[in-house]
Picture 1: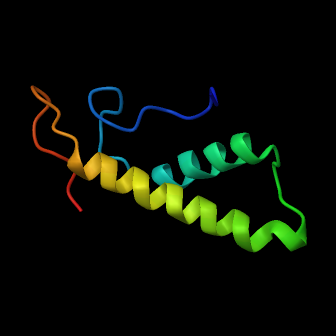
Picture 2: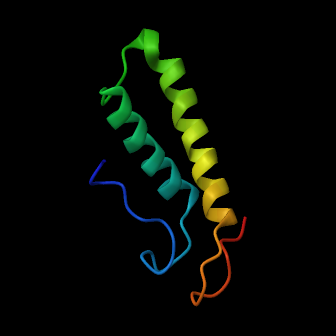
Length: 76
């Protein structure tokens, strides 16, 4: 997996993950899976849709996780 994708939940990340943190992780994931750092123009739209879908799934995951002993869940 991408070594540059960081854990976005407490306690690995002391503060709440921002939308920018989530999007950066999604972008790294899509780059790794697709094998493209930057897609060609004819693949740009599908690449961006994938990044958005992964970012939304990541945000939903973080919102739904129950982190015991680390305080409250991620707020929306």
